[in-house]
Image 1 (cartoon, rainbow, N blue to C red):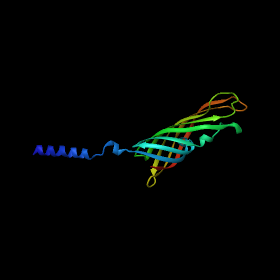
Image 2 (image 1 turned 90 degrees about the vertical axis):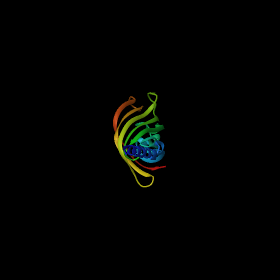
Image 3 (image 1 turned 60 degrees about the vertical axis):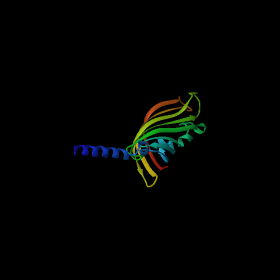
Image 4 (image 1 turned 135 degrees about the vertical axis):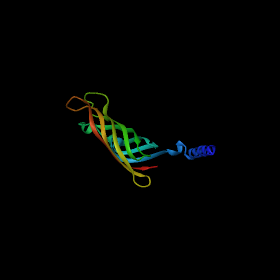
Length: 177
């Protein structure tokens, strides 16, 4: 009788294990397009996110691309900008999220002191929440802090090259594919 009970237990465990889906079926790749504001969206703009399970990577382009160095007047213009980052979720692309990100903006300005590269670099982290809003749609918000480095020329004074810590936020609406 004991052998029959042991055999039944082994058979039950083996069938339960066989019924589990493979790891690749649990976490397929998915993509999302977001429209939002914050460093993760390069100021205010669009973001593309690729996710598998609870981990996602993203790329953002937005208004910083059209920015100019402070105090540059009509001669200042943006040469390009890009935001990159990674996000970890408590659920499958939803609920609590931890995000680390960076943003790099390059400017062309006065060039009075010929300091070379002019622009802004930002590295930050936020904690937030993503909520699904029906089939395929979601909203997200996050808050945190970032380290920012700026370097640019000014018309009447010495060039600026400084680090600062700034508040960071993210607010977006998106659609999953």
